[in-house]
Length: 159
Length: 418
Image (cartoon, rainbow over all chains, first blue to last red; front, top):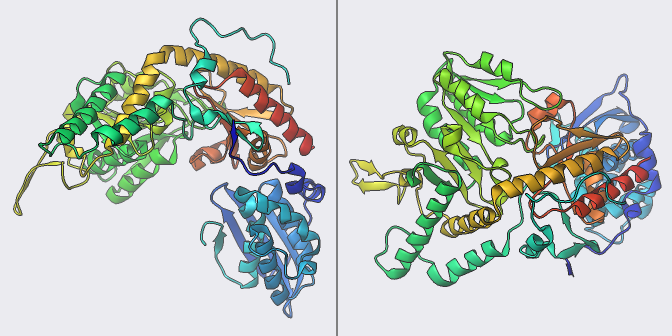
């Protein structure tokens, strides 16, 4: 028998405990009263939808939240993302988007500035599961749209 | 995971699956270090060596363009291409090879009917009847025609189990109904629709019926004359044949009256700049060089399947479906989607608190290939109130041991996400 699959990888590398925890108990899973930025994310391949809400004051993200349905990876990604961008400037959030994209697509290893991603590094395992990269990045694409104040539905297939 | 007790050994109707598996080279591999368990057959089925050999033989020995050359290779290519048409004709018991049109796939076959028959027959305020369990390929082509013509789609509702509400169906048929287009075997639910009765009902109202047999053709005997189907479409690649070859069956009388689909070579009798006379059936609908090798491969697949016997395949798969239904029912918090009394080959399911994509990734690590998502049936997902399902779909080469591997993998999913 020939083996044509990728090298055997431990599922726990993808589904780390912190990801499973955010999947079970997503943080910031709500709307925001007085949100002034909002964007919708959509992955037509799996039907996942995500609504992202930001409250931005003086260029700083004071609050971030999301709602929607999705897989463990996309839910945990949105949950941890909304946690981590709170208190960041819009420009810092854009930077984090770039860093995150590089991490999950495996375009740049090692990470240029790993400390900027902090806990988000748990998503590094996603790069070994090409079919799941979009699950992790849906929330981030939606964030970028909200940060850029684009009034459109972001699709993972629109690149 | 041990075998589910209480289910008998393969019946005499069945066959030796281990021997069958020797015919499918792709199955002899491991993925992620585990033996491949291929349960995504509703998306595409694997190909037996007989099909691979037929493709190789065609390109090695007979390849030439068809219907034109006077040289020997062109004659041979034409012969094997037309033999393939005859094989398909016998396979679905069509009255004539003139009723067998080769297309790219089932989708193109439906579009062909929509763009020719549909555009010629459907007018303002007319109606096309489909069902709530259609694949996008049997929704969008009709939507396009309806939009252009100011007509509307009427949708036969389904029960929560995934069966058609037949009493509603008859109510939808009226003086404005121009066509019924209905799936034979649902790719999401596995439901087998009572198309023979539905066709008889439609015919009482003078309405023709297209049957989408993309899934059905590989799982059950299809007799288009017994069904009295006006159109029947299916695709080669789900029937163990190559991709890029599909079939439109149409009653000769209807095909005769339909305008051509695409213009070009092969579909004409004579061309001047003033006037073109179209070719006879079925060539009128086959513009350009066809997928000759695809047709040859499809014929080899049909021969393979009929060599085993479609009735035996149906019986074997029915037992495996029952075994799989029992095995999956034993997985905690798993809910089967599609539990109609008449079912075949499809096990769609959801698990509480676990998205289908996560299920798919986890079982893939165990070597099990299943499909997750909306299965190109978004309106059906909306009707069922779920974003997606996980789907295991069976073929003639699947075994109980493979079902056991799937069930064990699903227990792992449960452990990981609890």
